[in-house]
Image (cartoon, rainbow, N blue to C red; front, side):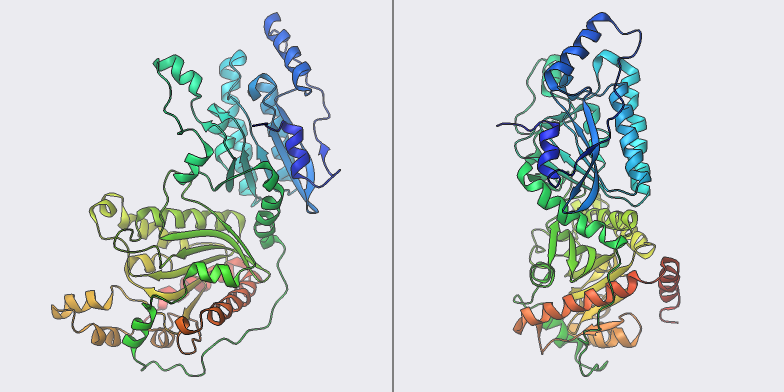
Amino acid sequence: MARLNAHELVDIVVDDGSFVSWDTTPITPAGGISDEYAAELAAAKEKSGVDEAIITGEGRIEGRRVAIVAGEFRFLAGSIGVAAAQRLVDAIERATLEGLPLLAGPASGGTRMQEGTIAFLSMVKITNAVMAHRRAALPYLVYLRHPTTGGVFASWGSMGHVTVAEAGSLIGFLGPRVYEAIYGEKFPENVQTGENLHKHGIIDAVISPERIQTTLARVLDVLMGAKEIPPRVADPDTRPEIVDPDSDAWDAITRSRNADRPGVRDLLRTAANTVLPLNGTGQGEKDPGLLLALAKFGSAPCIVLGQDRFRQDSRAPLGPAALREARRGMRLAAELDLPLVTVIDTPGAALSKSAEEGGIAGEIARSLADLANLDAPSVSLILGEGSGGGALALIPADRVLSAENGWLSPLPPEGASAIVHRTTDRAPEMAQSQGVHAPMLMSTGVVDRIIAEHPDASEEPLDFVARVGATLEYELIELMREPSDRRLARRMERYRTLGI
């Protein structure tokens, strides 16, 4: 498979004729290097057509300015020495100063061995520059190219808000040739590949270079959208005509469990005009019960954390990895000041040996704390079932919305009945007495707004999710226009005084 060099990658990513190089200062070899290394540098320059293993500059992607740093593997295997590291840092700092999103396209064997420990420690200042860029609430996007290994993968190659890899790429910490030399055996096949990293929740996608520009344009449309606050839209008035706290809670619970009821995937498929799935925790875990995505509802950009009702069953209930995925989404929202939507639709978190040993209780607590204290605008949507700690972890937002047949309870009503009455037969009675259904939740201040069902979302799925999408657009834009300190203070006061 033919691989693109650094300039070919830039050409395929940016708008035609828009790239401007930032590499205007010629690199000269450091004094005191050996004649052999000087000859290697000269030969690398001749072979690659560039003066170092990194090229930097800026271009436009569908008209939007973007800074770019890319590795050139033909220059000494893309290895990073002191000069390459400094060029990289200078470009990252310039992107930060100019408020530009940054695309990194590493292709490297890692640290340049000819320069030893000093080059190795250059990864520290590169990492610090990336962190400063992220602290400035600017997107850092990574496209891992074939091959990316060693200290490059273990520093700026693994720090993206969104990270994708080239199809068929070799991506890993320890290069297979080095492993074989050290251990005397070959590294297992099909481990250090972009496809395997995606499978294990470490990167978000595997895509070919031809798809990079389109993908980047859509990602930036969402991530930079929070800095370009959209104009207000009219309230879609999706509320039900009657909200009766004394309505039948058990009827709502029964409707919420209908197998034909739309879930978060239906919501995104129908009501969002942009959807870019993210994948896993970035730390080797993923859970099918939680969907993490970048999305736009109308003109409102957001991150969506959605409990997927169709992928939570007795074989794959919502586990600790799902909450660690959710917390990744919360961190993205916090860093980029991007609105967050949590979609609650769960029969409950996993009750199992593996869940306990995986720290389910701690993850519920940390998710709860992260969401309650999030600086970014947040909306929680009770789309259907809202049972137990899995629901609690995603509830404390600036605005809490509920489907008309949504509900929220410490346990499924059957579990509450078993605790109080030593039988599950009185579940309907427990649901009513606990006030778990949306009308009662609204009367007690738990829910801010109910979205109508006519009379049941399972009977009108497309119309229902369209109403939800319009409501989310309106609520998100209203929150985006409010100062963060005011939003956060109101959120804290809400839960401090709830029930008093």
